[in-house]
Length: 212
Image (cartoon, one colour):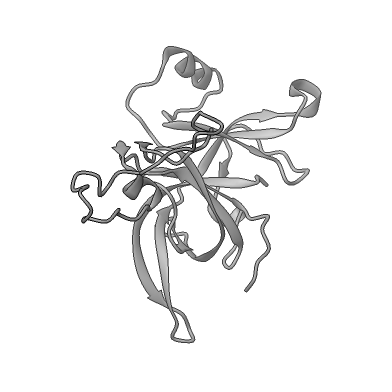
């Protein structure tokens, strides 16, 4: 099947395992994905499956023509490509469900866009400590302090300074699929995942070592 899945992030909550252990989980909605394009090595020089997810009222004219040509009566919000992990090719218009890609207790990585927090100082952005209040610097308690020495006479690249905080792609690895309810398409993932509520996140099989 495909190498990942795109789901909508929900709220966080806590559940208890069979052994009575409290687990923090993130509720997500994993709607079925519609196959809109199949890319092969012969035609496209690589193999992948393009899927559509979500729904919107209006589409660009080019997208509407493409879907009309494929005889698909959908108005997707997003298109996403995933690598093909099996030799079986799905047909255009087929539905891919979450339980056909992942199983309960699978170790996964979750990627999403973090919350944008605008322009932030070094305390909020990098976790710096305050400077002393005493000593005649009452207006410098939240300042970063010195940003360089006399040599080399410039600010080194990558210096932690105030700036735009958030709104970047972030990946959290070594999470687990706790449960999946096919009746309401609800999947629970252990821990917290990046992004705000109702944002779209991508789940893929984790390549990191599972310590559990």
